[in-house]
Image 1 (cartoon, rainbow, N blue to C red):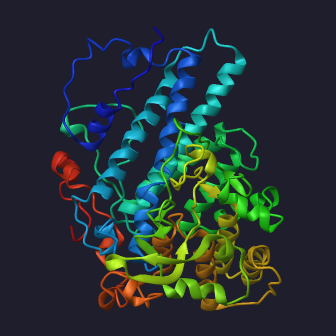
Image 2 (cartoon, rainbow, N blue to C red):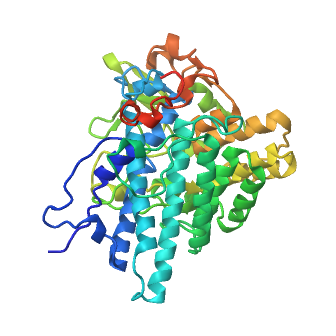
Image 3 (cartoon, rainbow, N blue to C red):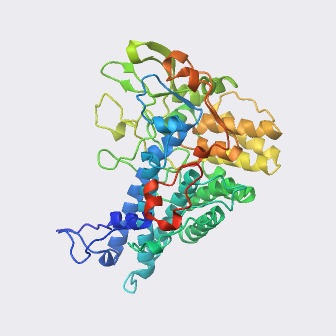
Length: 505
């Protein structure tokens, strides 16, 4: 029987999360092997690497992406939303919230396996390996460092304050070794936010040194360019604009924007890979990622009825009136009649950026599963990242150039407009909404720009949940729930962070 590797992830995650675990490692179920024998050959490394990518694909979309979007003022819940996503949408979640707990647990579980891979690669006896295999393992180790940086950065975004001005505030526990234990005295403290980001940069330095895979449009593997894109994203969040510019600028030359309306449409409709610095592989039925969508259309092909849970606010629709026909609006928004409680019907626009790739569902299926290949890095983000970094570096000329270049591609006939000061920054933020809505950026954009959540008029008030409240919903920049709570189970089990819960929980 071919052996399958089981890393005892639950034990590793439990140790990292502070939960006591006891297990006999002397005996294993048939078909499994012990951890000490899990990383001995290149074949072992290959299987373990596949596992890291599979988990990355699952964790790079799903609730960790759409829950922060639902917290903002991009969407209104409809009158038929049934409280799905309601705790996040209504800003009433607690330290026992399922989404906050799941992200923490899933990410630290993934990190445990990454640490196992990095430790194993350092310890494995390569004396009988070919030079090519040894060099390949070095590249794969670099991929693991990239993934560790990516996970910790995402955790810092959700569970910590914005970096600038808060460097001395709580960071997150940053484990770099695979050492599961039930000894609570070994569990990590949170440290400072500055320490967290320093560790992220160290991991990115290691990734840069080891990942030598050349970038290519639509790559399914972590490449040099993906490392640079993540480094640029981290640098922007830290206010290190020179590094953000240095990392993102070369990417603009290597990843052209869509050359036609059809090419643009296919970025999401069939996951063409165009404009993608990294697009993770997927296949039906056994290699599917999580969805970006949270019932944004709710279409039933059998009845022809739309019953969405969340619809864009009117001001989001109005953003596309500013400059004429926009490819993003014509492709990502759907005018439809929706049916709500009591058979009430309303005509409005639905967010349809994620219609589902037909190749990722059962052939002939009438209803979509709204699943796409996950796109952790698109070149359009780099244009907007550069525009912001230049603007915040008092380089308004290049900032306007980046903003105009993206708009000319997305808006046929667009004539460049020169902006300055706060107006320029606001235009960049609005362009991020047009381009990146639904991909999980906006809550962090609000934190970085120092903007409140301010829900406004609905497309049709009768279609939304509690319009009297949710058309005036406001949460200022100091509201504690801009930062998610450390899960209560972690606080209870780890005495070293018992007094390090985020404010207000």
